[in-house]
Length: 337
Image (cartoon, rainbow, N blue to C red; front, side, top):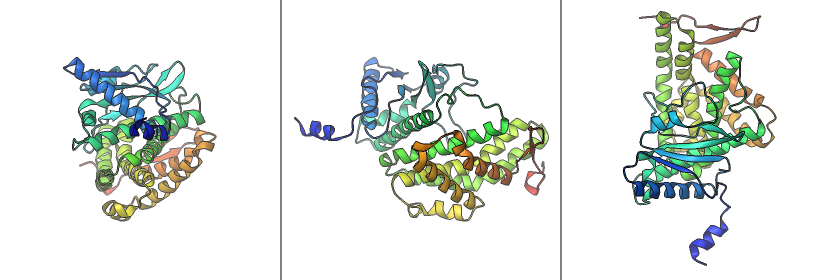
């Protein structure tokens, strides 16, 4: 028995399938595509010793990332096509979308090829970033599996018809999902904190003006759904990016001391009390995850999101007849120019 074999036997058993389907799109050389497909499958299977990947559906690595997302067979008819995250701070390069296979909810990993190619060479300066990117998306698979176990028949299957519930659930789910994924994958990201710190500091500095800009535009176009999406996303972005950072720090047993710029920016912002409460809620969710009984466990996050909406200029008011009224009061920052 070699030393490597002995070390591998001492590790936890892999949780990913022994044979992982891999689609390599846009490679100009078939041999290169096959070699990389083998390499990323081996990497993901190794990661699955630490992250539960029993619900992994397969992997797509694509140079045509946008087309790969749009063409992914999700096992049902989605209401909208998958698209990458793209705004003035973040451009998406990886995703772990949920799919249904034989009535089982799974996740399929999709990567923009240039971002994960460095895993071919451990001496590549971008090797560790590529490894972390893969591990982070793998962590989303474990998180999705957890929610599906606790709330079977809901993910991709239950339709939320109440507008307010759908709005708050979508935002709260994103916050929890990123916290959990970052906490699970923290061991793979020793150098990741500065990137999350930069993202949070930037969001804190821009959130108010971005929300105000969206509301000023609404005064002219009058599209309520559009302003809720645009202003709501802007005012909640600091919560989401704080969840990334807090999850990462918790996953590495580190404190805010390692991210002093973020700590100072939060303390000086109007988001400080919300992020403090959110941190407590996320940690409580993490500690109690195996005993969740219904999606109402996320209600404390809903309350925080609702309050941040109001702080940002969008007040959600439930009417006597059960309908939702959205009040968007005038303020100095939201008057049309």
